[in-house]
Amino acid sequence: MKMIWKILSQTRMSWKGKMMRKRQRSGRMTGKRRRTSLRKDLTDIYLLRSYIHLCYVDVSENHLTDLSPLNYLIHLLWLKADGNRLRSAQLNELPYLQIASFAYNQITDTEGISHPRLGSLNLKGNQIRMVTGLDPQKLISLHTLELRGNKLESTLGINLPKLKNLFLAQNMLKKVEGLENLRNLTTLHLRDNHIETLSGFSREMQSLQYLNLRGNMISNLREFTKLQDLPKLRALVLLDNPCTDEHDYRQEALVQMAHLERLDKDFYEEEDRAEAQEIRQRMKEEQEQEAEPEPDLAVDQPSI
Image (tube, rainbow, N blue to C red; front, side):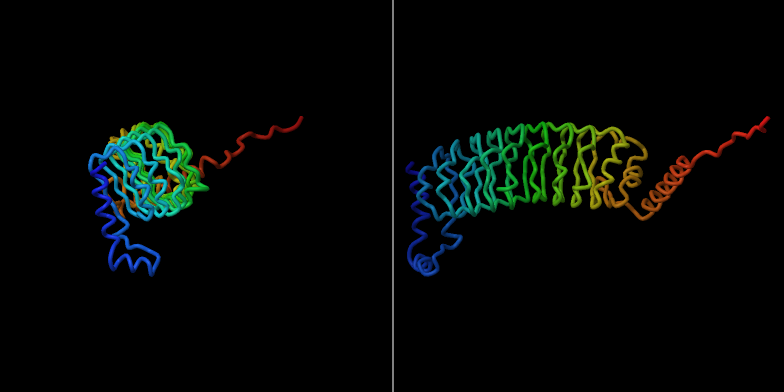
């Protein structure tokens, strides 16, 4: 307790003198005077509730199990609480909070996160099995969601239309589902899961440009056809999947996804595109021939 008083008293001292008079004139405090970093093996941050003007708080690498005193910091813009013993990221709605990180805790759910200006949420390295409670009507500004290294078994519950960057690597996912309405998603990271099929992608995901599926269990090249409806997909990573052992793996990917620019670490050359276009044209002609009706070979018999 003495330790936290010492740290906070130092913070309070910076509010005095000339800068205090400036605050009284403008009604604001500068970012320097609104920042505090507490990394001293703390188990309790109760005293922070008195510092309602703090905007930047870093309480990482402590032993905290409760963040409820932060509910009083209604001016909070930035919060970092990594490496504690938190079991929940739940806080009252903080109207100005824009960045929040709760990485490497013991959090088991995503309930109680409803900050209207929150743009980036980091929940990496926790114990979350299912995403619940992320209300798109409340999280109207969330563009980046980090959920790597959890225990997710499903992608359901991530119905956030404003989302642009979604990181789901190192979970326990077997398929993609419930992401069809993410119209603004540009980056989707699914590395090191157990995904066997590329079902779950739709034309509604019209902004997706980068898709990382490295280290999954995709074995059939025919799965590539399920990515044809992604009009802006430019980079695809499939290293360490069984399908990469097929000799025509790169070619088949480009045949099915004409707009693809990079597969794994290598960009496609113009000659690759020309060859893929020839294959597509040949396939189209073969399909048209199969669709043509066969001529009637029956011979009319003379009437008797």
